[in-house]
Image (cartoon, rainbow over all chains, first blue to last red; front, top):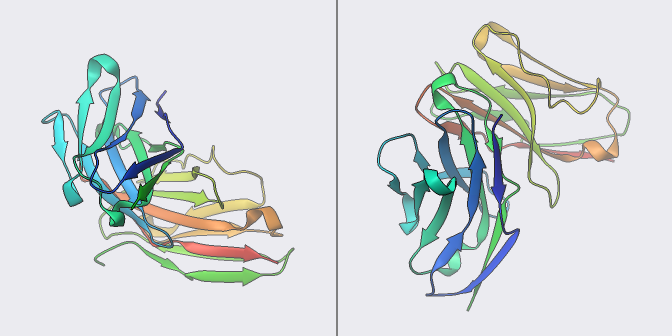
Length: 114
Length: 112
């Protein structure tokens, strides 16, 4: 069975400082992992995905995530936060090779302080 | 089409009425998912279709909820005798192996 845990429901950072959104997963298979972002009153948008290629994945808007199998983690980072990054972020796990159903974390709301 | 299309984008209905929500997935995508997002809550899995296999209905919250997917393409989520707790944004997503998931913009359902 697969599961995903987002360790923080809310994260607040100052504009220009680094962002770290934590995600731990559990999977019986080699997982595929994704981060999605949802801005207020908008649909979900794919930020980046890991599908067993490079462990450091670069996404849109300067975000990146590193797959660490030993720690079963896939934390999302950005070196310097921008006001436009304020949104809700979802970590997702799935086994793409089996096209199994996707499991969402509960989300982390990112607040950017001026 | 270019993306996943959901209709209607907004639906207000009276308690006790039935509603149908429609999802047009990306052409050729074999997998289709329904989720819902209630105010202040994360995404809740509802149902999953994969090709011609029997759907995974394990997330449907009650027998008032049902979904079908005709011809392996368009899907309809039906909620019978709607209740106020059914108010949420209903999201549809489709996928094909190794290509990630694409979400529709959702249907915002309000039960009054």
